[in-house]
Length: 205
Image (tube, rainbow, N blue to C red; front, side):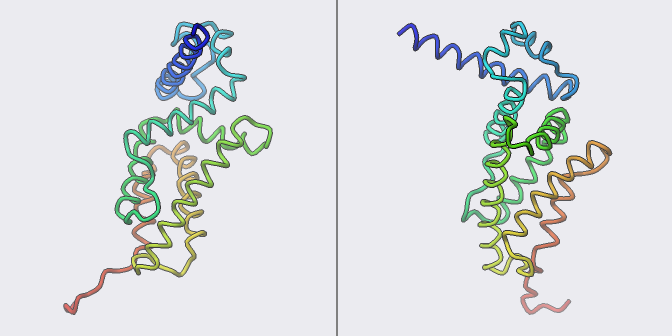
């Protein structure tokens, strides 16, 4: 029983660390959030903080996982297969719009995504699985919209899914260099450009 209680406390402390780390990084930025500062935010030494994670890289990876969990709570998941285009579009654009309010987390995501190209990096599996899941959901939803005549079929759904992901990831880098870039509006424009024109219903132009 004591071991079970100790495990539960450890899990709770780990969650507290991740939640506070999200706040610190969102406020101070990725470069300004040192292990020392993150540890102080939860009343631990640096060694005490890393007791809950194998490395700084694993800590940052788990911070991104926690961010994804919180985004789902606030914005709902990127709609699954069978969901209409409006929900897919509004959910995805809503998340991207929120990202402009948390520049530190955008910095962390972009930096870690590059480092994670190394198969040995702790974030490698996280990014591979996350990217595959996003593309799979988008591919299914976009294919359904194409079949319904709501979306252009000049490009296959699998390619379009990858284009949406590439645009979102690339926009984050552009936005970090130039904060005047409107990431959400640009993704909205991409959705709009791919949407087929509504029927005229017999009315004159």
